[in-house]
Length: 332
Image (spheres, rainbow, N blue to C red):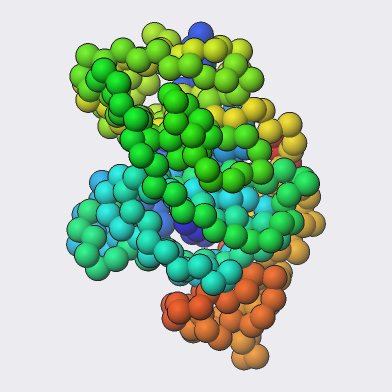
């Protein structure tokens, strides 16, 4: 989805460390007007920008769509990243400027590659009474960040053991592997733990990991992680122990340290302040009519780096103003 903050921050929240594990507490971010849904954002944080290539973690719901209006994210641009959409409840319609039209459904991953530039929209369907899920981004490495835009969909089969169930949507874990292609090694798993379950899960010791708790609460190697928090786990361990006193659902994310600094602002990932300014200018040029106003229909968007989201008639989202007299900083 889009980061629809009017004044997007470079620094968003703080972390606490315990036994080498950092606990990142979310902050609430509204995605629009007074009835709009809000998200709980844990990445990026003040102390941590990346977990592997994972650079953005938004967690939302369960939201009553009748009260919030659901997800109504009009066409907006991306560069230098891949978006990873994962739902627990509800349904979202995805359209993008590469010609892809797909539904996002629970237990099925949709991965969109922004590369050199793409635009897309995300609208919850009229049949969705409750919306609940996570929107994740991964940064593309230098060698691939100007790649062609693209889209992949995959519905992983669950794997099960005593008191647990897992769906591996990126990478490999617990004897299951995803065919979804990424530009750096990544891990993405939904885990369900029954009350009283203790799971020792083998992991790649070269990876750093993040554990986002959606439901319940868990102990990670003995460290408590509350609902909605994100635990950062540094590289070095070949196994992690998860304990749940109550039914818990979590996302396990991972990858080797990214090793590159990035500049992330609004919906763009680049390497320099000047690149971000260029991306913003390119988007604003595409969506601005001869009158100087933003076009009222996505089909009026001009040709350019970010293309046009076919089939969507919402007005595109204009980029917020860049911070005055401040250069965007690289982080990594």
